[in-house]
Image (tube, rainbow, N blue to C red; front, side, top):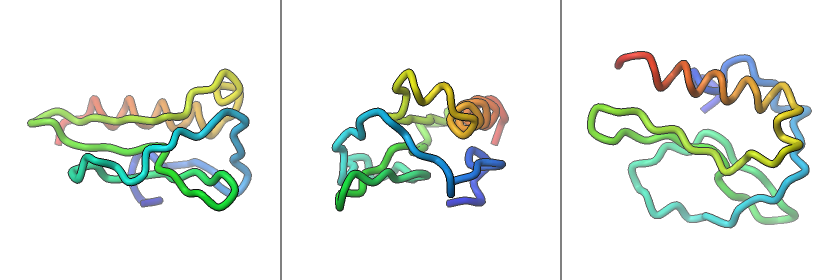
Length: 89
C-alpha cells in the first residue's frame, strides 16, 4: 500500500513507536483497506486503515502515543490523511 496518498513521503525504514500496539487483528470491517501494520514480538497488527462510508472517506489509526507526535513519520501520516479525506473522489 506504499503507493496510497496517505503514505506519501513517509520513511518506513526508521519508524519505531514507543507506545503500545492495540490487538485488533483480524479486522471485523471487511471493507477496510489496511495501510500500515505494526509488529510487537511475533504479532503483527493493523495500525492504520481506510474505508468508505457512503460518499465519505474514513481514516483510522491506533497510533497516537504522545511520543508518536515527536516523529516526522507520524506527523506526515496525519497531514496526508487529512488531505486525503478532504479531496473529493
